[in-house]
Image (cartoon, rainbow, N blue to C red; front, side):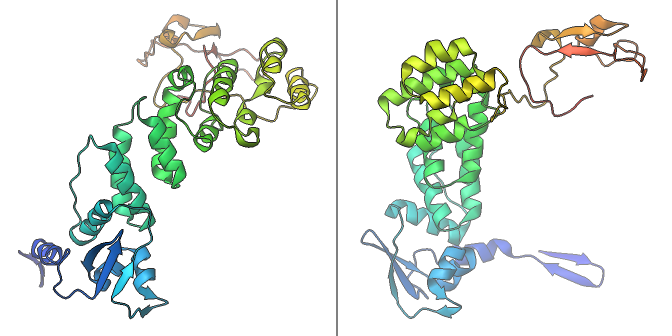
Length: 326
């Protein structure tokens, strides 16, 4: 296609370019290297792979010098089918997989990460994140942590924040130690700390908490002294020294080491009756304040007087992270 642009023309023929390069996928034509995965052989072309992946660039052009071997055994944690799909994406920019086959997607995103095929990794990550549920988040988060898939892990963490109570009710069943530690380490994984401890205790009954790292993620100083003495101490999961430290923090003898957990609600107005907010102080039109109405004349207000502390004070029903005041 020719488009006039002043005194120049731009010629586009990307469709045929993609078609021609795609035709080389698994083709012996012009192939200069054979890649072997689990005894299965794949014809390939060094320059195409190196141009599309920094992993293959380092493998095939060590230090900028093209390797002489015509056959290479690929030592990756991957099946031949997954490797074929990654190769197809490198040659064609497109692959087709079943949206319901989670295991295939997880194998593929792991291999895409190992081969530094970033576009494929992110596309698969977005696809997997869109299918997150309480049934599959555990296996997905475990995979993300095992292979350090940051993009996918962040999506799992956001989902966990939104479904903290359900995940706690399931006693974190299916989560690896590393995955559970990353979840409990989040300030926005919001739930009563006592319920978190009880679920952690049940998780520890079925799993090996190496070095007690999971239990250490429970923020004991945000429990009451009664809860520590009646629930945590009898479990024998926490050393007496750590219990005393937590109690000292609860009674303000020592400063708390950890922040209090709070829910993070994006784009939500918490100052409404719907969210059980209560106006403690204010002046005119107080009832309109919690109605979420921004029309002129339908608002609460107060006089600004530097010598007085009175203003509009709203009590939220739950601890929350406030990003914007409007």
